[in-house]
Length: 60
Image (tube, rainbow, N blue to C red; front, side, top):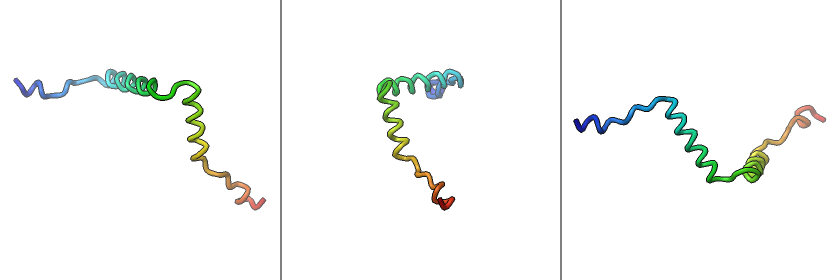
């Protein structure tokens, strides 16, 4: 009988996704919110952006 208690509880995919979404929302609520989050995101994008080499390739 103790073997049944050791087995993990079966959870439907829908329940699992709801739990995952709730945990993501919780993490985002704890992290930056609103305008600050957008500013941080644009900074990261600008840092990792590659330069445009089109002029160099075209010989202009």
